[in-house]
Length: 160
Image (tube, rainbow, N blue to C red; front, side, top):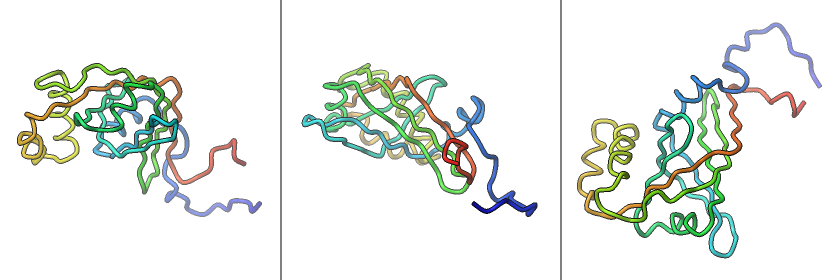
């Protein structure tokens, strides 16, 4: 194992776990999540999706015919990851999924979807959402029971 020199290593960024403020700031960016669940045969099923973080739980909105929403309705076990290039911030959480709303029109999912459309698409978000506002959607809450975070270009101490 080579020893580090006194060279400029600022390219590595801040190393270590995200604190609560950093976690909240990162999860409020427009970074796509990957949601994992188990399909009807018990196989992993992973889908990229928009998410909303409220400081303690993740919220996701699924189209009426989304396979993964039905899988979560049948089995609460889920995981979600949000990660990026560059500073390499990442969040990995195992969660319990709760179906807050089955497919409906005009439910609580609308305000969540409106906020997500703005976060992910900017000023064009409403132009994307409005033409499909008449399509039923699910509202799902993901309650993390384990969560790992990391930032920076370095291995965690446990790997050394």
